[in-house]
View: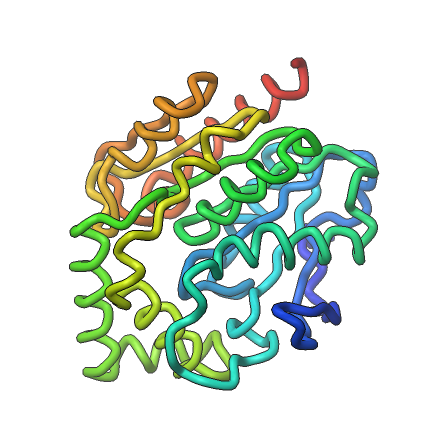
Length: 271
């Protein structure tokens, strides 16, 4: 039996007063009493772009899993325009959309939940934990952003050039119904001059639940200062800094990341 429920399903929600549909997919849904890992994808990600890693992690840890594509990504409702998003778009995802989805799927307190977020998804996990962390077993954040760094902007401009040259657009178009809104909504938001002041350190300082923060030494979108700042703000946070690892720790150092998450799960179950 495959660990992945291959049928895509759709949830009808609202975001900013607009009706939207989000695609979602379960991993090992029969494990009804096991902790639930909720996977939060990166700024250009989707369910399909996770590949098989979430299912692999759920098999190793004995958990069930939930993946979904945010508004504008994958097969979810596309954005109507290609301009920048509101500057608080990550707050909106973490404090408005995610709680709606969990409630609609009956996962608002029935069993332990751990958020597993990458990049933008890591920031969403941090913000969600600041808002309702007392209801979470913990969060795992990989390459999260707490503030905007010069290296982030350089990486985003490199991505823009690759997109405009065509090969990145061609690759992403396989995963998104509207690749233009998916890419430009991310790229134009982060390069908006007013976004340079975006910062969630105050919110992070209020997180009550356990945190495992993971970052690659060679991350092209952020420095180690991102996760080191988490521990300065939340002393109980655990850090994992990975050599020979870029922006995708779960692909670049899969075995180490999986073991670290498994150990973190077992530790948080005992506390």
